[in-house]
Length: 237
Image (cartoon, rainbow, N blue to C red; front, side, top):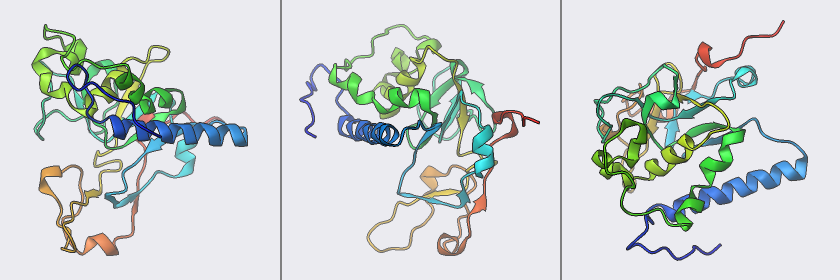
């Protein structure tokens, strides 16, 4: 694969290689489905530089998991002014909200219903068509999210492209959930290791309820995580 040329003067090129690799992953997923004659229910994107202290929910919960929820690592609720970074924002935590009622959606990890995975993993398509460097909206409007002028800093973030793609889904109503909530997958460590030094918990990334003790990294057996009850479909009897 060779990246297409991107006009950095006119177009937003940041993250293109990253998003192109994501698209390649989706191509592999589709090839696997075609070869084996099935379609996945969900597609998950994770990071190998995370250390997890909780295991994923048991399979019986995945069988009941609603197909309209997108789980992102960090999500903030919409308020009177847009999120522009930091850790004092109104995080979604255990709540589930329609995508119209959330503001910031990060790009660290995601669990996607299969029918919206293609759009999420094909952000590179939009970059290749040229996403303008300047946000297309000049008036601040919460409905525009990272397109609004007052959030011009977010326009350059990779997360903005993820957000725009999810908001463009029109054939179903999406609900957002947050994976890093203490009640879900919260126990996780971002491994910011330097050479062979001991990894300290990076306070600048202080999300969730990860144990700050250095000894926990190699000795803790992952706890079992669970999806919130509201995310599960009723048991059929």
